[in-house]
Image 1 (cartoon, one colour):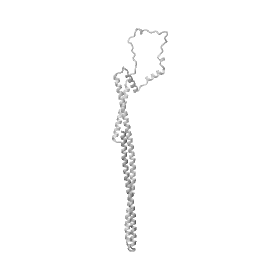
Image 2: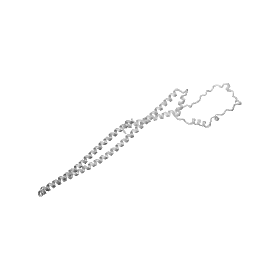
Image 3: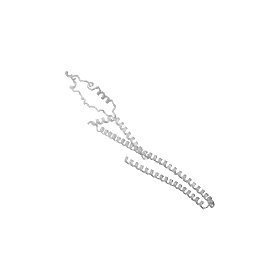
Image 4: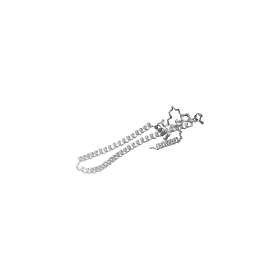
Length: 268
């Protein structure tokens, strides 16, 4: 991983931490807000009228009024009691505050504060999503780069192993060539001694025997030269194979670099 990408990742992580801290502060601020429960205002007269001071008499034909427990079912009363006793979350409190602010008696300052909190929460949520997207893209790029680098390292190791094998073969061929040269030098020295001996013998045996020996020596020299040419041809062929392998590996690296650059452009 390059230093520049590491710095970018650190910066994105720091910004994500700041956004998370802002969200926590916003949640704490919303949670500490004193939300007032909706209540029905009932106007109560200051003085009791004369008509109200008199106790009304129930009519003879009208039945007695029923109590609240007889009108409201026990399940509905339990659900209402549980809903009131349950501690509401900050999101529910924010929704209730927005519903209260829709009423005509809502204050402008409270409405502005609620709107600012809502905009801040949306902005922080967008910033968190943006940081998460950046981190995910950076992680994908790093994974791709690591995969390409590991593949290149594997290919380079295989190429080095192949080059070592070829160098070992070339060294073996050089040793064989050196041995052949030494044998040739020894044969030439022996042939020189043999020629001297043959000269002495030829003086006794005649010209025909000398020509036959010279032809045999020339034949041996031709055979040795043919063997040396074959060894040199093998070495030249191995050198050509090594050069071709090096050129092929260079072309592969160029193509892989181009493919990697194209993938990065497409992701950007």
